[in-house]
Image 1: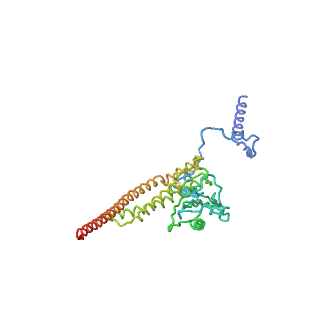
Image 2 (image 1 turned 180 degrees about the horizontal axis):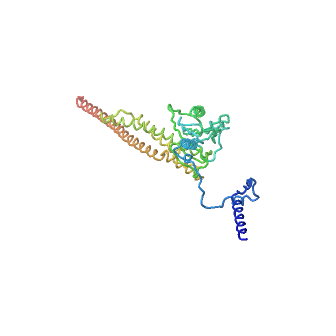
Image 3 (image 1 turned 60 degrees about the vertical axis):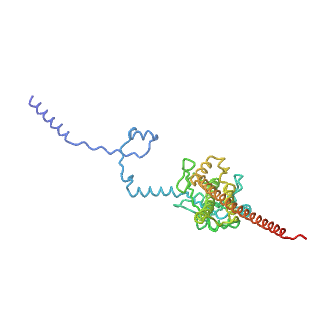
Length: 373
C-alpha cells in the first residue's frame, strides 16, 4: 500500500513539473486609443504627472550657437531690418536770403498743410505720390506715399522723404518765389527712423533720430531746427569773410603802418555785420521758443535734443564773438579815419591862417610905403 502511494506521488510531481515548462499564451495587444477624453485636462494629467522640475529635452547646440552661419545670417538680417525699415531721409538747403511765402502759398494752395501754430515765418507743403512705392525689404514706409517740404521766409527749405535726384524739382518751386539767390547753395543731410515699438518718445543717433512715428508737427519741429542750423552756417561764413578781411587789413597795417580803406567801404562792412546779426536774431528766430514744443513735452524734447545735437547755442556764441572782433576793428578804423579827417581840417585851418597873415603883412607894407600928399 505504501509502495503504490509513493508511486502516485512521484507521477503527480512529474505532471506538475511538465505543466510549468509549457509557456503561457501571449495576451492580445491593447489597442491605442487616439480619441480625446471628454475632459482634456484630466487626460493631460493622466499622461504625465505635473512637476515644477522641467524635464530634460535634447537640444541641438548648433541651433542656437552664435558662431553658426545660420545664426549670424538671421541676426544680421534683423539688425539691418531694424536699422533700415522706416528710415526717412531729410535734406536741409539754404538757397537764398528771402522767400515770398504768400505768393508761394497761393501757388501751392492744394499742398499746404494747415498750420497748428501762429508762426508766420514758414509754410509746410505735402505732396502725395501714390504711384511710387518706396519699399525696404518689401515693407512700405509709413511716409512712402507722402513727401514734405518746409519752407522758411529767411531762405531755408527742408525736404522730407525726397531722394537726391528729386530734390531739384522741389527746389525749383522755391526758387520761383525767392530773392537774393546764392551762387553756392548750402546743404545738410539728416534722417528720421520710425520705430513703433520704441519705449521712450525719441532716441538719438549719429546723423539720425528715432521716433515712434513722424507726424506733421514732428516734421515742423525737425524742419525748424535744421533750417535754422543751415542758415546759421551761411551767416557764420559771411562773418568769417569779414573777419578775414579785417585780418588782412591788420597785417597790412603791421607792415606799412597805415591802411588804404576808405570810409565808404568801412561803413559797408559795418552795415553788413549789423544786418547779419539782425537776420540771425529776428528773421531766423534763433532764440524764439517753438509754439508746438511749448504745447507738448514730446516735441519739446525733440526740439531741445536737435538744438544740442547741432550746437546751435554754441555756434551763435562763436558768431557773436566774431562780431565783437569785427566791431572792435570797425571802431579802431573809424578812429583812424576820424584822426585823418581831423588832421586834414587842422592843415586847412593852418593854411587859411597863413594866407590871412600874408594878406595882413602885405597890407601893412603897402600902407607904410604909401607917400601922403
